[in-house]
Image 1 (cartoon, rainbow, N blue to C red):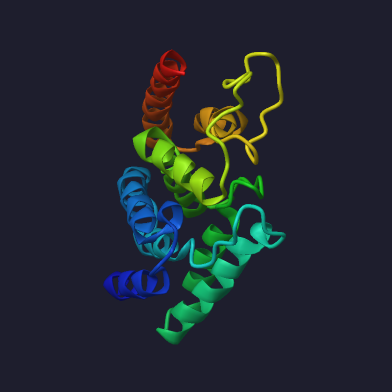
Image 2 (image 1 turned 135 degrees about the vertical axis):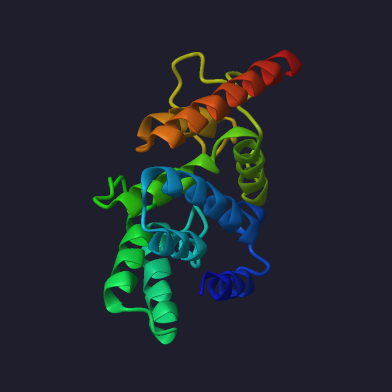
Length: 206
């Protein structure tokens, strides 16, 4: 059943930008698998949610950006219903997808929702998180950093729509504080330490 959903997701995400492509889906899937087993989650609901959570992704600058998770959930409902999934399972998957988005600032009420949120946010951290950040910055033609204050050391408010490095201060270095599960908190702290080391090296080079 999940193998079929993997194929569906891969087909629908063909040609997607590297930050939200099928490999992102599979990294989130693996994160969810590890955390979910430790937490005792309903793995069918959780892993289906991971596979279908980013079916629709609008660009960061788009007025539709906040609708990405809702539109993904709507599409996921149709995909699962077509495959004969029970309505209660479809609803639970849909809820996970609707509440996973960082921009919505929602704390999911279900274990599976919390695990999906953790699994997705982990992929924004560490080496992959750095790669994804600069991939998005490049696709939106942002400069790497503000030349007069690259690391917001002068109490400047981060402007990550202009400078890619500002995204670290605006969001990434705070993400570990939003994790729900023990495993995700531990992994996130390690990844944030790596990102801070990257920024220290960047400071030496510029």
